[in-house]
Structures are given as structure tokens and as C-alpha cells.
Image 1 (cartoon, rainbow, N blue to C red):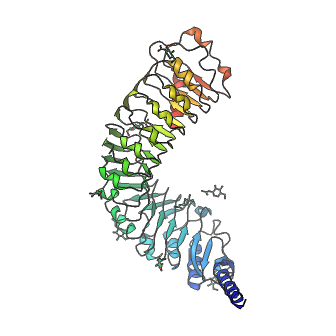
Image 2 (cartoon, protein in one colour):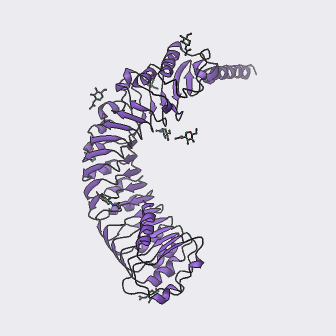
Image 3 (cartoon, rainbow, N blue to C red):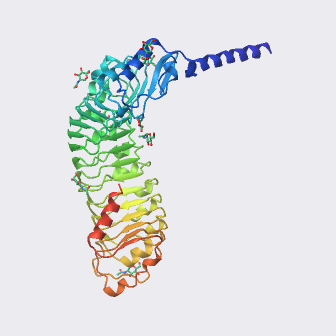
Amino acid sequence: MAGSYCRCIRFLLVFIVLLHVHGGHSQPCDPADLAALLAFSDGLDTKGAGLVGWGPNGTSCCSWTGVSCDLGRVVELDLSNRSLSRNTLGGEALAQLGRLSSLRHLDLSANGLTGAFPASGGGGFPAIEVVNVSSNGFTGPHPVFPGAPNLTVLDITNNAFSGGINVTVLCSSPVRILRFSANAFSGDVPAGFGLCKVLTDLFLDGNGLTGSLPKDLYMMPMLRRLSLQENELSGSLNEDLGNLSELMQIDLSYNMFKGTIPDVFGKLRRLESLNLASNWFDGTLPLSLSHCPMLRVVSLRNNSLSDEIAIDFSLLPKLNTLNVGTNRLHGAIPPGLALCTELRTLNLARNNLQGELPESFKNLRSLSYLSLAGNGLTNLSSALQILQHLPKLTILVLTKNFRNGETMPMDGIRGFKSMQVLALAGYIPTAGQFSTFPDSSFVGNPALCLRWNQACYKRVVTTEMRQY
Ligand SMILES: *[C@@H]1O[C@H](CO)[C@@H](O)[C@H](O)[C@H]1NC(C)=O
Ligand SMILES: *[C@@H]1O[C@H](CO)[C@@H](O)[C@H](O)[C@H]1NC(C)=O
Ligand SMILES: *[C@@H]1O[C@H](CO)[C@@H](O)[C@H](O)[C@H]1NC(C)=O
Ligand SMILES: *[C@@H]1O[C@H](CO)[C@@H](O)[C@H](O)[C@H]1NC(C)=O
Ligand SMILES: *[C@@H]1O[C@H](CO)[C@@H](O)[C@H](O)[C@H]1NC(C)=O
Ligand SMILES: *[C@@H]1O[C@H](CO)[C@@H](O)[C@H](O)[C@H]1NC(C)=O
Ligand SMILES: *[C@@H]1O[C@H](CO)[C@@H](O)[C@H](O)[C@H]1NC(C)=O
Ligand SMILES: *[C@@H]1O[C@H](CO)[C@@H](O)[C@H](O)[C@H]1NC(C)=O
């Protein structure tokens, strides 16, 4: 009885201590931190809205909006989306925040702030772990925090930072996430990422990076997400890509990579998404993709891949998007594709595929977008018979196939339940058959495109652009 009484008291004491530590509002504010915050706020333009919720001077800074303390020290500053752009925020003001010697999280995202970030964090930010300055208008070199041994997350997405990437300083901390998308970085992807041993997310997309990939990039054992799309990268991919065994997401689209795609995907068992669209890859589709059981999205659109589609789709139950349009693939449409019952988007357009649509396509119950345009397919009548069974099909593009003067089946387009855009142009139906199209049987307001003209072209291209 006495023992449990004691335990109860101890529990209560712990509870009270915890309340004291985390119940921010009653905490005093360390004078040095107060001075730093006031200096920061003084650095703001008084014409602007300023920092609503800061002050009055007499209250503890720990109770100010966006400020969190631990034992009276400011550990977190969340000023995300606080309309700070109505102030001019100079490098000076930011350097003041560097004096917050216990600050672990700094979020200044979505404020439209401009100007340079103080070089090397103004020598401050010794305890910083997470920095988010995304969606501002910062210019100049990207921030680095050489004096911060615990930096793990740096998000500078969507600014105007330029110059090169200072990988030496970045990788000297245990960084896990680097988000550098949508800036103005140029030059090569630097060597040195091999030192980033715990990096999981590397986003460098939407910059002006050039040159080929350094070998270091294949030496990050924890890497899960690699986004390098929309740069001007070139050269070929290395077989060492297979060493990145934790990879879940790769996006290298819209670059100038060439050569064959290394057939090493059997080593990337966690891969969920592969986007290599709009490059100059040639050779065959990598067959080892069959051994990525988690695969959901594959886009290899707009390359020069040739040969047949020989991937074993029976091993890819989660596949929901396959886009291999605009390549040089030939042979038949593989019937096995219909085993991917989660498939929602399928683009095989502008290849040299031959033969009829496989009967098995009846089973693609989730398919909502299908483009087979610009191939050498035959038997329109059979294709429409099969496809009208698909309850979710909303966009069907069959233009520029069926070149042998095939006729439109009389009841061919009655069954489609969800159709929104149906493009059939590019074969030559006789005038009499137009009158038999039961447009009215479509639900909603479908766009039926029967003749290859500007309107049809626009409809096909805009729907295609919405896909991967
Ligand atoms: C807040 O109080 C301190 C100390 O009393 C003073 O030095 C400082 O100027 C005051 N700041 C503002 C913004 O009123
Ligand atoms: C910023 O806040 C406004 C409302 O104050 C909201 O409408 C907007 O979506 C927010 N923007 C971001 C990027 O969070
Ligand atoms: C940074 O802030 C933005 C919102 O302003 C958010 O969407 C993004 O996820 C944050 N970055 C990280 C790495 O948490
Ligand atoms: C990287 O940053 C450190 C510290 O600010 C600096 O000394 C070094 O010159 C920088 N390196 C590059 C390549 O910019
Ligand atoms: C870095 O993190 C470790 C572990 O949490 C902590 O003990 C150390 O004090 C931190 N270093 C700084 C400079 O904040
Ligand atoms: C990739 O792994 C192979 C086999 O373990 C090794 O020989 C090669 O050096 C590794 N490549 C890189 C870039 O680390
Ligand atoms: C196809 O890829 C090339 C080479 O990357 C690119 O220039 C072109 O814009 C891409 N076309 C489309 C329609 O994506
Ligand atoms: C088209 O397919 C249907 C049904 O599979 C078949 O009966 C018909 O003979 C085929 N037509 C041609 C021209 O091959």
C-alpha cells in the first residue's frame, strides 16, 4: 500500500516537472534569446504587418506566436506563411536568429522573403537541426551551417539560390533530407555525396545542373528518393545504380541522359516509382523491373527504346501507371499486362506495336486512361468490344491505327459507361457511319473526336500531358 502511494507521488512529481518544461506559456524567457528575437523583429520593416503575436515586451517570449521553448531557451521558431514579405528582411535580421544558441527548428517557409541568406549562417545556429526556408525569393549561395553538427533537414525549395552546391559542408553533418528543387543552381552535380552516409532524400530537380552524374551519387546506402528531373544532365547511367538498394523513387526525367538503362532493378526491391521520361535512352526496356514487387509508377515516355515489351507483369501487382509512349517498341501488346488489375493509366502510344488488343484487357477494371495512338494495331471492332467492359475508362485514344480501312461497328461505342474523351480519328470511316454514332449514350459531356483536325489534336495532347 505504502509502496504504491510512493510510486503515485513520484509519478505526480514527474508529471509536474513535465508540465513545467512543456507548458511553454508559463516559462520565463532567457535574456539572450529575448535580445536575439527583439533584434530580429527590429530588423523587420515597421511598415509591414510585423510579427503579430510577438510581445508585449513584458511577457515571456516563450508565449509568443510561433516560438517554442525548452527550459526557457528558444528551441523552435515556426514563422511559416506569416506574410513576412511585407517587411524587408535583410541578412542582418537572419543573422540575429543565429544567436539563438538552442534553436533546433527554424521554419521561415512561404513568406516571399528576398535577399541573401547570411554566409555560413552568419557563424551562428550552433544547435540547428531542421531549416525550412522554402517558397521565398532568397538569392545568392545556398545557406550552409558549418558550425552545426546536428543539421538533418535543409529545405530551400522554390527560391532563387544560385551557384554550386557545397556538398563538403552539407555532408559534414548527418543530413537526411536535402530539398533544393526549383532554384537556379548551375554547374555539375559535385562529387562528395558519398560522404552523406545517412541521406534519404536528395531533391535537386528544376535547376540548371549540367554534366554527368558523379560516381559518389551511387554511394549513399540509405538513399530512398532521388529527384534530378528538369536539369540539363547528360552522360549515361552506371550499373552501380543497383547499389542504392533502399531506393523507392527515382526521377531523372527531362534531361539528356543517353545509352542503355542499366538492367539492375532486381537489386532495388523497394522501388515504387521510376521516371526516366524525355531523355535519349536507347536499348531495351530493363527486364529486371519485373523483380520490383512494390512498383507503382513507370514512365519511360519519349526515349528511343526498342524491342518488345517483355516485362513479366504477373510479378507487378501494384502497378498503376505504365507510360512507355513515344519510343520504338514493336511486337504485340503483352496480354500479361491485364494481370496488373490496379492499372489506371496505360500509355503505349507512338510505337510500332502490331496485332489486336488482347482479350484479357477486359480484366483491367481500374483502367481510366488508355492511349494506343500511333501504332499498327488492327481490328477496331474487337478492340471496342473489349474496352467497353471497362467501367472506369474515361479517356480512350485510338487515333492513327487501324489503317486497313476498317469499319466502325454499329453498336461499338454503346457500352462505355464513364467515357469523357474518345479519340478515334486517323482511320477513314465512311460518311454514312457518322450518323450511327450514339453520342447521346455517353454519360456527361464527352468529347468525341472522329476526324484528325486541330481540335482533336489539342484534345489528345492535353489529355496526354496530364499523364505521367
Ligand atoms: C523591451 O525591454 C527591454 C528591457 O526593458 C528594452 O531594452 C527594449 O528596448 C524593449 N524593446 C521594445 C521593442 O520595446
Ligand atoms: C498561407 O495562409 C493562408 C491563409 O492565411 C492560406 O490561404 C494559404 O494557403 C497558406 N499558404 C501556405 C503555402 O501554407
Ligand atoms: C517546408 O515547409 C513547407 C510548407 O511551407 C512544407 O510543405 C514542407 O514539407 C516543409 N519541408 C519539410 C522538409 O518538412
Ligand atoms: C563551402 O562552405 C564553406 C563554409 O562556408 C566554405 O569555406 C567553402 O569555401 C565553401 N565551398 C564551396 C565550394 O563553395
Ligand atoms: C547534437 O545532438 C546530440 C544528441 O541529441 C546532443 O547531445 C548535442 O548536444 C547536440 N549538439 C548541439 C551542438 O546541439
Ligand atoms: C557497388 O557495389 C559493387 C559490388 O559490391 C562495388 O564493387 C562497387 O564499387 C560499388 N560502387 C560504388 C560506386 O560504390
Ligand atoms: C521529348 O524529349 C526531348 C529530349 O529530352 C525533349 O527535348 C522534348 O521536349 C520531349 N518532348 C515531349 C513532348 O515531352
Ligand atoms: C476481329 O475480331 C473479331 C472478334 O475477335 C473476329 O470475329 C473478327 O474476325 C476479327 N476481324 C478481323 C478482320 O480480323
